[in-house]
Length: 424
Ligand SMILES: Cc1cc2nc3c(=O)[nH]c(=O)nc-3n(C[C@H](O)[C@H](O)[C@H](O)COP(=O)(O)OP(=O)(O)OC[C@H]3O[C@@H](n4cnc5c(N)ncnc54)[C@H](O)[C@@H]3O)c2cc1C
Image 1: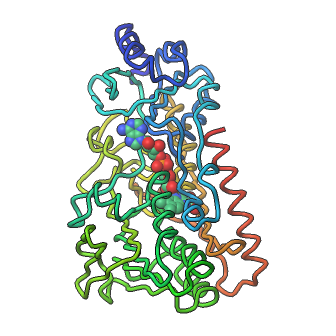
Image 2: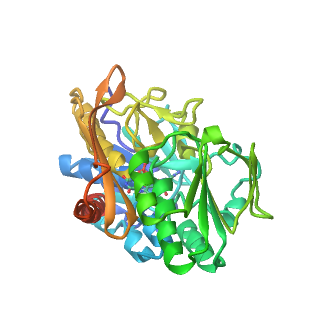
Image 3: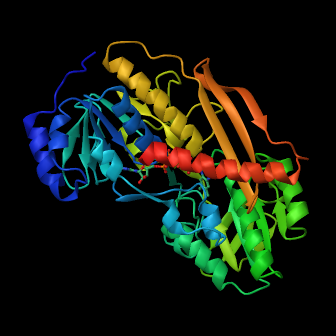
C-alpha cells in the first residue's frame, strides 16, 4: 500500500495559489500536509473525524474541505423553528480546528479522481491524498417529488439542512394566521434523523398552542410506523390533544406531488392546501459522493463497517449520513461515533496495521416540549458486512414527568458534548 506518496510541489503550489483567498488556516499548514488525509465535509462526521485523526497522530497532514465559514447544526433546530432557541446557538466555526494544525480549506470539493488520488476544488485548486474521508451529509432528490425543486423549497421549506431554511420555516409559522393548517410531508426511509419530523411536529404544536390555538398540524407520512411512535403519540395526547393529525402510508399519507404556487400538497387520497407547508423531500448522499463514484443505485454509499472503506472506490472512506451501513441510523450521534472509529481505522491503515473492530454508541433525544424529552440509545457492531444493533434502550412510555425533565437536561448536555468534540 502506498501511504507515502507526497503532494507534488505543483499540486501544493496550484492549490495554495487558487485557495489562498479562501483558506481559513494560513498556507503553511497546507504545505505540512505533504502526505495525509483529506476530509470532505465539516459537519458532525467530518469535523469530528479530522480532530480525532489529529489526536491520534499529531504529525499526520490533515486537510478539511468545507465551503461554509461556519456550520449550522440540525440537532435543536426544531427548537429554533418553534421560537424556543436562537439560531446563534446553532452556529459553530472552524477556528479551533484550524488552530490545531488542520488545514481548513473553505471551498467545495467538485471533483475526485481516485486514480491520481486528487480532489478538485471549486476555485480550481487541487489537493492530493493518501486516504480520503467523505462526510458530505445529504442532498435532496429534487427529481423524486413532482413540483418540488430547489426553487419550490423557498416557498415550501424543508428545513432539513439547517440555517436559512430553519429561519424561513420559523418566519412562515410566525406569519401564519391563527386557524391556519401546517402540513408536514415526511418521506419514506432512509432519511436523515428518522424521529426528527415528529419532534418537529411536537415543537410546532407547542408554539401553536401558545400563540395560535385554533391552528393544527397534519403530518402526511410515507411510512406506516415510525421511531419511538408510542412515546410521541402518548406525549401528543397528553400535551397537544386534537392538534396533531397523522395520515400514515396505508391511510393515503404518501405525498405524490406539490404545487408551490398554491401551497398545495397532493396525495393519492386528496389535496391539502397548507397555511405553512414543510415538505421534507426524499434524500441521498451528498452529491460529491456520487461524483466520486462512491454512491450506488440507492443514492447512498455502501461501506465496509470495520474500516468505513467505500465498497466501490479504493482509498476512500465514507461516514455520517452519506454512508449506508445496515441498522445504524442517520444521526449526528452516529456520525460522531463513526468519525472516531473511522479515524482510528485510517490511522491504522496508514501505519500498515489492520483496523480494529468498532463498537459504536448512538443516542437520540427527542424533545416534545420545553423540559420534556425521551430517548433511544443503541450499540452497533459489524456483523456479516453490516452494522447491526446489539443493544438498545428506549425511555419507558409511562415514565413520570421528572424523568422527562432529566432527559431534556441530558439532551442539552449531549448537544454540548458532541459540538465541543466536533468543533472545539
Ligand atoms: C431537524 C433535524 C433534527 C435533528 N436532530 C438530531 C438529534 O437530535 N440528534 C442527532 O443525533 N441527530 C439529529 N439530526 C441529524 C443530524 O443533523 C445529521 O445526522 C448529521 O448532521 C449528519 O452528519 P454528517 O457529518 O453526515 O453531515 P452534516 O452534519 O450535514 O455535514 C455535512 C457537511 O459537508 C459539507 N459538504 C457537503 N458537500 C460538500 C462538498 N462538495 N465539499 C465540501 N464540503 C461539503 C456540508 O456543507 C456540511 O457542512 C437532526 C437532523 C434534522 C434535520
